[in-house]
Length: 338
Image (tube, rainbow, N blue to C red):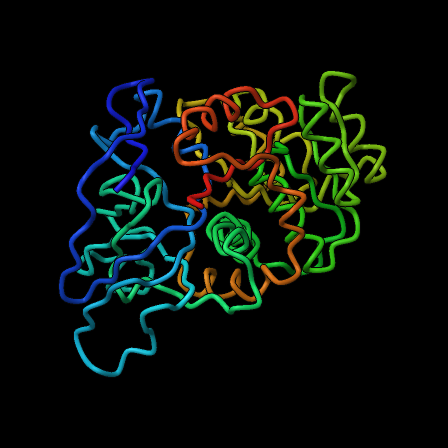
C-alpha cells in the first residue's frame, strides 16, 4: 500500500509498504481523510520525544472497515461501516486508568505517534477504539471529530458556571474550535486574539470578535470589553511565551485560565497574579471517551468547511506539511486518499 512516512527530521516520503495485518480484536480501515495536526509538525521537526522513524503519522482520520476480527460475536461494527477512531492507547493499570481518567494515563500513547497511523491507504485500529460515523456525515467531518473533541474537553474541564466574557488566545484550528464550542454553549461575548490577520479573518467568518495583537494592546481591549474587570475565563491556545506571560493580566479576580495548547518549552507565568487574584489555572490533555462521543454529536452543527483550508492527495502529502508551515490563510489541511 502507499503510505506517507516520516523517515528523519524534516524528511517525508510517500512510498510502498506492506499493508497492516489484522489481528484478533482489531480492524483494518481503508482511510478516506486524515488531518495534519500541530503534533505531526513537531514530529516532522524531530521535536517529539516519543515518535521514532520510520513512522506513518496521522491520528485525526475517518475511513471504512474492510477487515475485522472481533473477539466475540456481539460487536455492533461490521465490514463496510464508516468509522473514526479514538486514538488513545493506554496501559489500563495506572492510577489514572483505574480511576476513570485513562486519557492522562502515565504511559499514554497514540495511534500515529507511537504506532503507525492514518497517512496511508490502510490503518489498523483496536476494535474497541472505533466509533461508527453516521452515513449522513462526510469522511471530512469524521476526520475532524478528533480536534473537535479537544475543544469539547477544554470546555468540560472549565466547568461552566455563569461566564459572560471569554477570551481565546490563539486562532489556529484548535483556537477556532474552542471559540466555536463556547458559542455552542451559549457564551455571547467571545474575543479571539492572534497575530495572524488571515487566521483572524477566518474567525470573523464564524461571527467572532477578533483582536490583532500586533495592532494594539490586548489588555486595553479586554478592559474596554469588561468595564476594566477582566474576562471571566481565558483559553490559552497559542502556546507562546508572550501569551503565557500576559494571560493572568486578562482575567478578573477569581477568574479561570484553561491551558489548551501544549507548550514545548518552559515559559514565564505571573505566579504572583495567580495568588493575588486567586486565579484558577487548569491544564487539559487530549479528551475522554465521553468528550469524543459528544464531539461526534456536535460535528453535525460544526461549520467544518470553514476550518478546512486545503486538501492534498497522499502523494502530495509533503506539500500539505509545507502548507502547514506557512500559516498565511492556512487552517486545517486534510490528506485525502481518493
